[in-house]
Image (cartoon, rainbow over all chains, first blue to last red; front, side):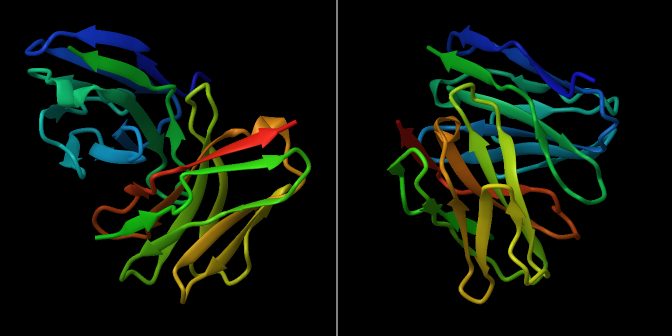
Length: 113
Length: 117
């Protein structure tokens, strides 16, 4: 049972480049989400999904796209990277019903120059 | 919208001491969950303790306990007999119960805790 996995662990992009951060979970969790962590601001929700085919925006969705074609995978796409997207990105998953504990992946550190 | 505030950016105590981390939150919800997460230098987010708002009894997990004051919207974390491995960032988080947008975590800014030998 690998839990929540994220790839890559580190990434450097140039402004304007695109990329996809991968997230996968093998716990059959219905709920998956993406957060970004910036210094002094805690984690903020970008997008989330309550099941395959269903996604919605969180607190800071601009500049990011998501899709959920399977229960296991929830990729986060940056279409045109900007320096403001330099951050650490965490994927999390949980069951749709209680006890609502969210399991976090190890994070991806992204730097946009 | 819910907000979570951690007013102590950094704290430092000696090993074996007891330390309390503060957290306040603002919400109009009546049913919700509160969490403390630990983030060590490895960057992994680890759930420390969880409290359901409808439960009056404060949650405890070994050396970790909370003081949940619903009317005051306060949720502090007490670490007893602190250990070097407790050195980490600690985040307080809020989650509303049920309805649209349930399971969305709202985090505080974090408190960096250092345990000194």
